[in-house]
Length: 219
Image 1: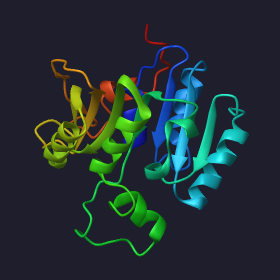
Image 2: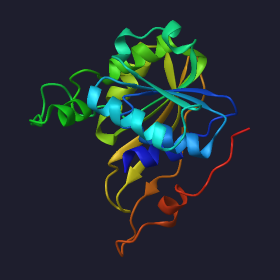
Image 3: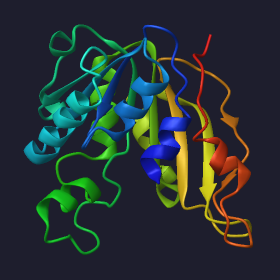
Image 4: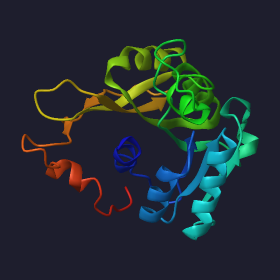
């Protein structure tokens, strides 16, 4: 669910330039491009197989004028590789700390889940290099690691713009946090109402279902 939840919280302006770090097969770019035809999205994917899937998905959905993907390590990319600095960076990054937990024997899944090729500190370091002044970073991440997010932001001149905690049900601890942070800007952090995914009857909540409704450009 994470990519769909994150995508629903990104409200770009017209002609906004977006970079998706670790785009995988291109789920988030496909959602944003279908909702906001005027945006320009660059997906960056380090894994060759997923890069190939993303390219095929772009072709199949006739979105080549809106989305392009690079098979590259975000750590090596400079603004000159992305036609200048971006307005927004989005990421559903690896979320399990390096050297902790059982590493999946499937390397593709391991890289997607564990901080093997990218960690949260490196993500903000790269974002600082690739974003315009006051550019934004959107992330969905385990709620239990919010202190890691706060420290990484502080190290790389970002401050939180809004937070929203995601719960499976009411009266259960948050599983994820959606974060929007801003580069080189001081802004009071907005704590948005929590998002509950299921009712007590195990049905999707209205709030969750509303995330899939068509959106309009943010003005």
